[in-house]
Image (cartoon, rainbow, N blue to C red; front, side, top):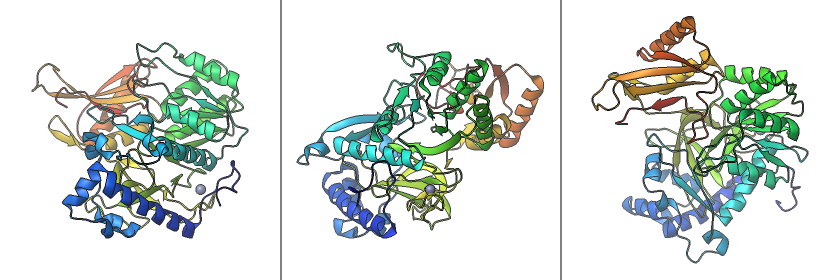
Length: 455
Ligand SMILES: [Zn+2]
């Protein structure tokens, strides 16, 4: 079936084929897990579960959820022991890193050559679902980072998988040992000169680029797709980006959202706006939605924790891994593209732990949702800081920094908004344009940080 499919056409199995392929992959994965997976082998022994207890995929629910904290504590124990396997399954092709937790330590995710071949297939499916053709040219707008991550490098691999050209604009200089980065204006000109048809990066940076392109009177009529990942893109920001794109002549450009994770080595993508986020490789990756308390799978249409299971990996392998977001799943064939796969039909929401500020428990995500509505694409950063950073028992400050000219009226409005969302009064500061650009250590613009020493 696969061998006959043209390379530039999307080819997904039907419902029956998908079920069969998943069961076969699951059986093989459980053989490997019992024999070669240090973390799960121990967990299964503790639970007194045997290989025979996992006859079909439905039995996967016997296994409790794996948390990010468990994976981050001992990432090497999630890599299969590969002695005796074929060369492709033994050789480490690359190691990517998660963007880190609140502790800031990135976690390695190991892929063998075998895994990398499958990642190419996943990336190709992502492009095809998003409507990329072999006439397209991609502008890679992710920065190089101090630790390799799956954004910058996988764009190159995605382009390779479909034999399309890619221009890496190399924005910024994220390390004192790296000297090849380009400034904003250089990147704007690179895009113009390349006649790229696809812009691919984080939304806050793309918005900054398009705004600068307008100032520089650039025309980008060739741009027809904008792939955004890594940060939420609220509706207000999406329409602002759409308007800005129109001003550079990219009138018909479509903004395509994805839900990516290092643990997927890619992301779930939309085939059309509002069509839901599609799992791009359903025979090898299972996306489930479960009750966060009990860990049991929920029927489609119910909101719960998003859980990822790898069905065909030889490096890092995760089963029932909670990605830390809430959403709603459906497996109904997509009404737009017809593909049968897991689709998340609600924008995944991060379930951050509550944070204590000035003695009050606050939910940062709720404040950010409220600020997103007010500020749209304007860059901002909400932070908790110590009044006196060198004193362990010093009080807390909630600080909201917003790019833009000083505006007392706006400051009052924003102060009220934050107070209403969490009960704590923030200090509001206005910063110069670009002051809150993506920090050197990461590639996503964080909107909330806890800067207190004890955290
Ligand atoms: Zn679709």
